Image 1: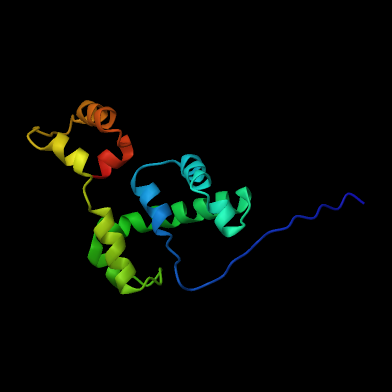
Image 2 (image 1 turned 180 degrees about the vertical axis):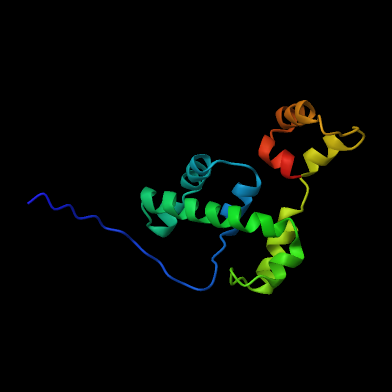
Length: 140
């Protein structure tokens, strides 16, 4: 009959779910596909019984949420007083604390260097030397 039927999963909730492991991967600058691969390697599919498609969707949803939260993380009081994301205060504190945490290897490389606007090359070098993604170096 030419009629096409697609199945769509919809989840509606009012509490923003934050997976700390996925948040760490996002903070560390991994792409969604790299994060999914790392999660698969950690054995999450076996632990949860989820499919690869569900894991991909879950990771993308978390990354989208983190991207939307990032502008609020730039000004922590905004995160604490916003009404869009229902996040318990203890979870908000964890998000802020981890967002502003420094990677020890990064700090060791940066201390003693005079940083300026033209530090892209310096950050590239630090990223290569420490194995920390460039995105994570920029955030720090």
